[in-house]
Structure formats: C-alpha cells, structure tokens
Length: 395
Image 1 (spheres, rainbow, N blue to C red):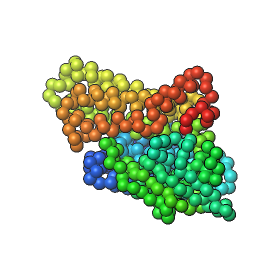
Image 2: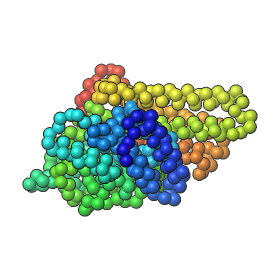
Image 3: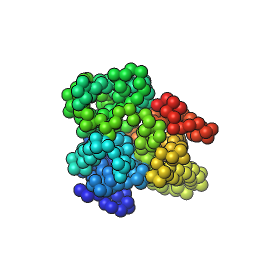
Image 4: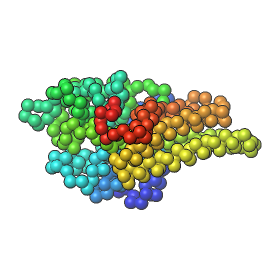
C-alpha cells in the first residue's frame, strides 16, 4: 500500500492501526498468545516504511514526527509500540542517510534493505543486549571473524534480550572483531531469522511487555555474506552511537509517552464514571497534577524530537533526547502513583487496563539510556566535556 503524504493522515492511520491492535493487548499481556498478531497488523498497515524516504516508497518521516506516531501506537498497545520501535531503530540510521553519497557497497546495502521493507514488508529487529552488559557496545562478547577470501563473516555469540524474536525476518546483530581481541570497534551485521546457526530460546515471561516477544538469541557459526555488513563498513557502530545517539535509545521515549497518555486517559474515564466523584475539588486537583506532568513531558518530547530532525547530531539535540528520555521515565511512575490514589481497586485488579498500564510505565527506567546515564550525559554537557569522544562514555 502507498502511505499517505500528509502527516495528519499518517497520524490517523496510526490511530486506526492502534485501535485495531488495542484489543490484543490484554491477552498478550496474560501470555495467552505470543503477540505476533499485532505485528502482522502493523505489517499490513504499511507503517514499517514510515522512515523510508518517499523516493524509495516510504513516508519519509523525520524523527520528531516519528515520535508522534510512536506515541499514538503506544497509547493503544505499549508492548507492540516498543517492538515496532525496534524495527525502526535499525531502519532509522539508514533512512537518515538518504541523499548522502555513499560507497557502491553501502549504496547497494541501503537499496536492498529499504527494498525489503517497502516491497517485501519485511520486519527488522536489533540484537545488541548481552547478559550483564545490557545494550552497551564496549566489551561485547559476541564476535565475528572474516573469511579467508573476504566474501563473508562468521558470527558466534549469545544475545540476552532480543525483541521481536520469532516475529522479525531479520536481526541486526552487533559484534566485536574476533580477529583483533584488542580492538574496541563494533560492527553490525544483518542476520536472517532462518540463517543456519541462528536460534532463539523461549520468550521471557516478563512482569510487563510480554508482547515485545523478547527472547535470548544464539549465533553458532552463522555465515553472513559481506553484502549484509551494515552499510558495508566495519567498526563504525561506536562512533555512530556517540555522535548521534538518538536511534540507540530515544525511540523508547515516544512509546512510553503514549503509555503515559493512556494511563492518564483511563484514570480520567474511571473517575468521571463515578457519580459526583469528578466534582470533588481534591480529585480535580489530582487530575490537574497528572495533566500538568503529562503536558510538560509531551512538550519536552516534541521539542527534542523536532530538534533532532532539524539539527541531527548537534550537542543540543543529543542533550535534549537524553533529557526527554529521563523526564518520560520519571513521569510514567508518578502518574501511576496518582492513578493508584484515584482509582483504588481498578488500579490493582489483574486484567484491568489500568493495572496493566501501571506495570508497563515502570519499565521505561529499564530501557536504555537508564536514568543515571541520562543525567550523567546532561551533567557532562553542562560542564563542557567533549561528548563526541567515545572514551567519555561506557558505551
């Protein structure tokens, strides 16, 4: 399908798609299904090509508008929005290279990958996190080695938390150079779900976000052709994440903003359904505080996202996405506390939408960048530390 050209129409498509997957959230949260039906609906919607340039058949969205779409989906089905974001984590950096002259190998890679999304409706996912290290690139234990003739690479290792396990067609795997144990450089490789040597463990039974279909991934002598080296360049991953960190973690911000919005909306609905309850000045003040917190977080998220679109890679844009991630991570749990006070039993009754949302918003702190990492980045920015130096961070 052809995606709408006007953003308002795209946002309506996201809202309609969100409404279609919203009824699936409860059963998936209860582990009654694997959550893959929501991703089937997202595939059929065409939204997997949101970031793909228009000349390549996509919508060509900038980062700020992408966050708005992600928040719309997150307000309907938080786990599916997070999975949807993992696809765009690996598409985003590629899409942003549109219009940039690349080497023949990189250009061929870009054409192939975007074609898989647009023409094949293929879903991609990121495979970075490792046990004990999370999503940090430095010190990665998954390794690659080169073939003698230079035509392919061989990957070995284990990833601990891989979203879209069993749902995605391809996984972009981060790996360190196994031929040079002293090197800190990381490269990314596109591994197909059905490549020999690729395996997945059981989907993790999480206390929230079961619908992300997250599982461990093993790579046992997985052969990857050179054409599937991300953008045809080795050793660029750490350099990229330091200079332009927004795709490494900032997409979570939009999804969790949507969940916070849904939590507020369901709280208001619950309060106004009780006769006379909404007329209480105390209750009105509680709702007012929730509204102010949500509005402040949304304003920061929108400003940060639009700044990335306008000034991608600038120090201020990078600082703003860290600030937005931190504030959204703080806002969700605060709204959850407000909802508990206002809604009582509905907020703790297993299976109630409010109870699920209260659990879900707590997990923004788990996703990178974590609160202390966001604050450290902002502190370094304030004191003039060179934030383009990879040695400044533990990534």
